[in-house]
Length: 365
Image 1: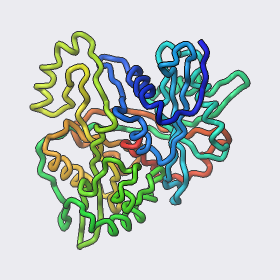
Image 2 (image 1 turned 90 degrees about the horizontal axis):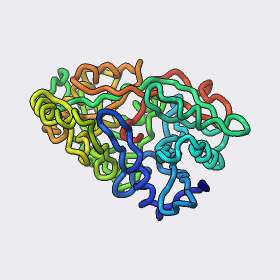
Image 3 (image 1 turned 30 degrees about the vertical axis):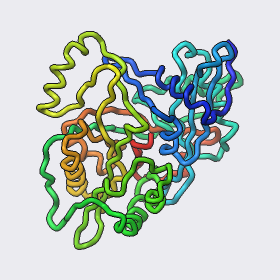
Image 4 (image 1 turned 90 degrees about the vertical axis):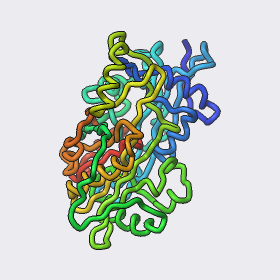
């Protein structure tokens, strides 16, 4: 086995997709996090720039052994716009694991990063072992990382609902005419959280690839006294990003029809036949004046009512300790815990980051 690590280009799309399709998360339900039909479309919504490193095996030139991506985007950090680099989509094919390929991929990435760069990533809760293994190379430590926050992802089950809208508030769908007010509200509210993506709604309307699949009319806007006080979008990404069920343990598959019947009556994520995708959509760009929990719940309910049961769930993520994190807990939901970490090829970046709540845009992971 002769492994060579290099930067990817768009002609690698087929081999990247095949690698992504081969790597799965095992359990009672075998899940694949896929990116059909074009890996690069999904990569461009994670960041507006990417450095994609892949590992070739000279003995098998038709397939890739591994992949990692560092995507760059502007986020608010300590109240100011800052370039931040997200390390994600690290995948090593099963036959190549425990061979140091992840470390080789990160060594390639280091060539394109400065020791001053602010970098971060997400891992499933308690699953830092791959990071510990990847950071160690023959001559010492390649990078270091610091777990900072627990992230609570909620798949809120959709149901028939009548939104309880606070007194004096009206909620409606956004139009292009709302963009100036949306931008002004965003510029005021988004910097209150670290990690909030910097948005340019004019670029969204112009079709910038960073906003692929977002439609202005999919935003719910809340007004009080004629002033914009809240916003929340929905983003259906199945056209370029899928959570596919690849198989079930035998007894789970046998009970699947019964479970789906229960989910249809009482709410839940229906389990498709093997090869099908989970049917959910993402909530994104949540902004609420004064972190008003009742208003945030009204926005979620409004989007749920508008969805009309087309999706099984609405997905959102909040770091524990955020004032709005308690709102998704009021719903029937499926919960997933993960950890956010800061990563650096140089010094610990945490002293330069203040104590504002951390926001993680689930739709851009």
